[in-house]
Image 1 (tube, rainbow, N blue to C red):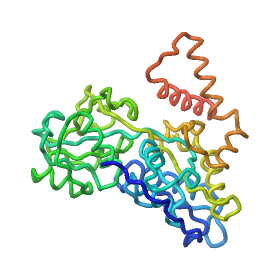
Image 2 (spheres, rainbow, N blue to C red):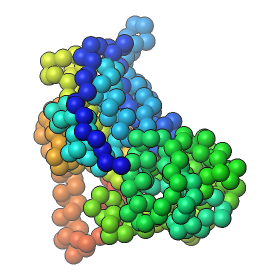
Image 3 (spheres, rainbow, N blue to C red):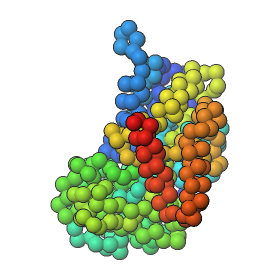
Image 4 (spheres, one colour):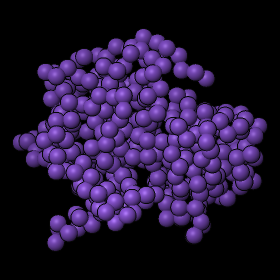
Length: 353
């Protein structure tokens, strides 16, 4: 279904209920995006001196979204929603199709984040994508990344399903009753629910091939036993596809109080990024390259200025690392990003000695 053009939504310029709180719209509570927001909320609160009544200068409030179109709509319309984690390809399409009007001046990005993998969980008798033909498959709530992009992917692969749009709990209940053949989750691995909360009962993850039709907007990825030991056997892996995500923000007026609060948030996040990459936080933080760019989007001013004032930070490290690989004649490394993150963790341990 094509995205429809609409006029740009209006943002309530008033203050949110708590003027010291920034709202971060994420995915559902079971998603990695929500876990990332909780990491931010906990770390930001614990890293500040409190006032005489226990108050802090900045709080991050996770706000449940659908991981898709609603995340961006909330940022564009709700006074308390300052930021959102959202798939880049989906936000690009909203911009280009003007589904929410002309949002180019209303929405900015703070930084690219990580990739979000497609997790297609199927009943025991479903062994491949072709087995899903004509079956009821849950793609998630309407407007979510799973619904919009999952529909597109399956159509591109020639798999005609009977689409269902349910929340995760209802979908799993339908799978156990045999009413739903599979359900799709688009979220960064490992999704904690699939690691700890799922009683497998023969349910398993289906591979999604990285076909030529998907190569423009999607990336190849792999789910390993180490990611999901309860549903992927030791030594086995599942090929799948993924999309890039980013942290987007409302483009508040420069002299507004919300802009100043968001400026404080950026300084906090960027200056403490090494802490977020530590072992106590979600592994997806290790994929984050704050200096990465999103073509066609304007970066939030304070984030751009921070990167310009700290040229010796990540961008320079990335450039030096790339030069090192090239000097060793190993420039075409397929897992270059993974090696860079391992290099950053090694460097952090060396500095702590």
